[in-house]
Image 1: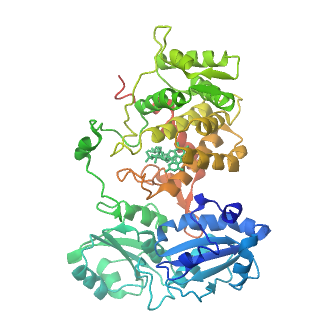
Image 2: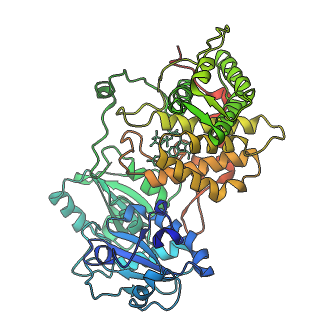
Image 3: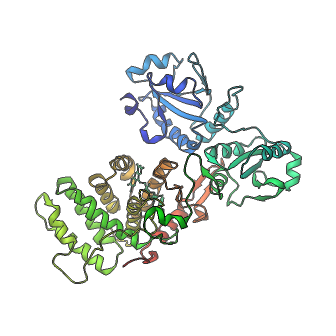
Length: 517
Ligand code: FAD
């Protein structure tokens, strides 16, 4: 379709606008909507697309109050439609207020540059121009006062109130308010540095700073590495009792046993477990690959590369390594362009009865346990496995192909990974940027950053385990030095520190062997 041929795909969290869905999207919507009118042939638009995508990722939590859309005005079916909105140049951004009438053609957002944080501030200014018909999901954005805070506790059963103290030119308070709008049991308000009563009452001297304020007047300062938006937002989203609206609250760990029918295995959430890696191997080789009774051509090439990489880099127990090497030798010696799974199965199950050679049967999830049987487990194991493999490849030095592990992963996912939707997304990411990987450490970093793109897309989705929320990983608690801010105060990864953290986290020597048979 025209929408798909344009500059954005379904993974970008940007709604494709068409003449057909314009009524549903723009008219009488409960959220304000920003539309980018672009032409796919226009170089400026191509250059702007990454900025708009970054904006979409940055403000995805704001969706119920403010959503983003885009339309390719170069597509034949869209031309007349675009001109009816007064579009003469590309890219153009227009703001549609919540509850817009059918006759509304939106308001131009002028003077935006290739700086998504500046656009984000313009969008807040526009949101604040709503008068009577305020978007219902949008919390109040104006500064609060002592009187209002007292009233809030009288009329509301809110568990936490976060007060962000800031100068009147700062947007952080409003940004954090919007970042938390999909979360329950918390309210966020901004307080200006000129609001003497509250500033004096709490003894506030830093602007910005964030305080948690409780009924009866007790308060504590929110502890963060840096006084900046993303640090506030992620700390507030993780406060006890704060949950994403519309999701069942996290189950406490002692009742989990009843849900999964398996005993809950206590584990350290900042370590890697061999039990997860072996479970992933078992499931991939004995279940996913087994779904192909005959493995031929591309799939066979993918399987050979996958097993070759396992035999070379999997940091496994000697028995498992013996098995992987024997499977690898057998596969490499197959001359034709197809094999029967049954034949492979014989090797996997060590039908020759070679001593000290085995891949344990069955799944024992530990770090990848889910609070429900349909959550986490295998896909978690796949990510973990490949992170470990990229790190082991990188630490093994040598002058091999830097994309050896990534290429094997790409082939495996494309040919065998059962979640076809996931495979398609992963293939898109691989096609987009995998060739840019020139060194083995860069391969580990590429997988880390792509995994975060997936986490970002899936945060809040039904597949998210409420006990293991999708975060931009590693969290500030796991690796404080990995996080920093840019000149705008926006979150930025300290890439050097991440490159130091990955090998320590996923290294062979750090893997725990609890729960192995
Ligand atoms: P996972 O995301 O599986 O992560 C496993 C563990 O890796 C985490 O517990 C954490 O310790 C660590 N980790 C997290 N982030 C990073 C990072 N950035 N770098 C390094 N380590 C990290 N599901 C969909 O619904 N749609 C999709 O399109 C989709 N695509 C997928 C593509 C691939 C290739 C794979 C393997 C899985 C995909 N999934 C997709 C599944 C999804 O990504 C999760 O694996 C699944 O929801 C389980 O999530 P989890 O909470 O166990 O953590």
